[in-house]
Amino acid sequence: MLGFIKKDLAMIKSNFKLLGILFIIYTLMGLYNKMDISFILPFISVMIMISSFSYDNYNKWDAYSITFPNGRVNSVKAKYIATIFLIIIVSLITLILSFIISYVNMKTIDYAQILISLLGTIFGTLLVLTFMYPIIYKFGVEKARIWIFLIIFGLVIVGGFLVQYLNLDFLAHFISLIENYLIIILIIVMVLMVYISYKISAKIFSKKEF
Amino acid sequence: MENVLEVKNLCKKYDNFALKNVTFSLPKGMIMGFIGENGAGKTTTIKSILNIIQSYEGEIKIFGLDNRKDDKTIKEDIGVVLDDMFFPEILTPNDINNIMKDIYKNWDTQMFNGYLKEFSLLPNKQIKTFSKGMRKKLEIAVALSHHPKPLILDEPTSGLDPVARAEVMQIFQNLLEKEECSILLSSHITTDLEHIADYITFINNGEIVLSRTTNELLDDYGIVKCSEKEFKDIQKKDYIKYRKTKYEYEVLIPNKKDFKTKYNISVIDKITLDELMLLMIKGEE
Image 1 (cartoon, rainbow over the protein chains, first blue to last red):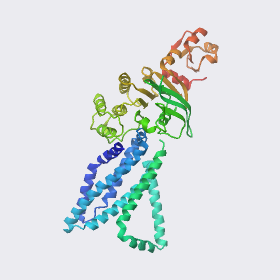
Image 2 (image 1 turned 90 degrees about the vertical axis):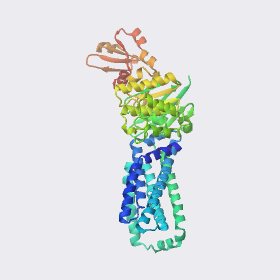
Image 3 (image 1 turned 120 degrees about the vertical axis):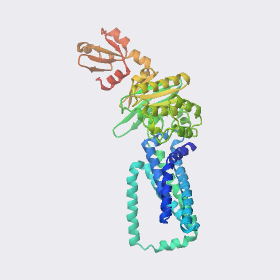
Image 4 (image 1 turned 60 degrees about the vertical axis):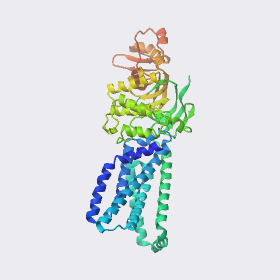
């Protein structure tokens, strides 16, 4: 298992230079434009993980990994663990940089605001990735792009319809009810998202043939 | 003789191709050349052995264990080189060593580094900077460095120039001298196999056409080169296939000795695996 995680981490590591450059650019943008830089988390994480799937696909790693002991299980598990590791690292760096930017721009650090903003971004990032992974495992990274586009497009249309024609006051009411527990609920939902997504991907990969 | 690998009645259907009752076995300590033209079913058979393809019918046993039920145990002891499948090319040999020591219980870092040195592969260079021959050598180093009992090699010399091909075949020959290992080596480049393989298994259009020791095959089989009149005198049961060339008939016979006693045809050539494949595939019955 550890070997498979090391493989994905080594691939993430090979992007560190790019990661460093992006962080410098966004920090400078944050300093000059007084903007929140937490949006770089989904941007960087999705980009790096998609590129890792692309390299896997290009060298047919998925099929090759099956020739190793427990390869069908470990190769999927490792991808999820490496993703979480990447999100933690990028979140920590974003957090530190946000503190610095906040202090430089406003001479004070709004810890609560920064933490909530980051948590929301982590949620968004995980939502995108956990949604994408089973589709990638099912269709491959190339075809998955089309499927992801089609599904997001479909969701936007359905969402737009719901907002326009349905009374969504109950949703606002529901959010106000759980406001005090929002962080805990968000964390539980994130854990569930990762777990369900992993289970679906593992199931798909356990039956996949190359 | 104990068999390391046994494939029995392996069947797998696709829309335009099927493996039909593929059956053969690889005895311990032997090299088996698995030959056939491109698309004959070599890779599908190997993928089934390795469970990369799972939805097949039939039985595959490795060390006497069922390859689906005992997948994890079996894979600890198999070394694999597959055509076009490997680690992502942004990794380095050092990365691979670091990864593999946590994948195989028997991973031998010293042996792996020894192979890197022997093959002149720089440990810190990304795979994508290697030539095709270097990459293939790295794949072989990875396959060998956990002391595998059988090696399963799918087209390990495909796409290599003659020098690199000879080097790669030499590696396998050296390995057999050093370690008790069995090798299933699929290739459509049959000249690579004539000197190294103990057994030849020939697959054509998804079916095993023959599976015999190389010596028996090359000693018994022959090519009769004769005129049309001479060919017409040969009974159908005494030859396998024939081919009409510009000047003569080339007739594949299964037993040179028997043929000599029965017919008065003096030109019976020794067969090469290339000729055998060509006549089996393109010849008429």
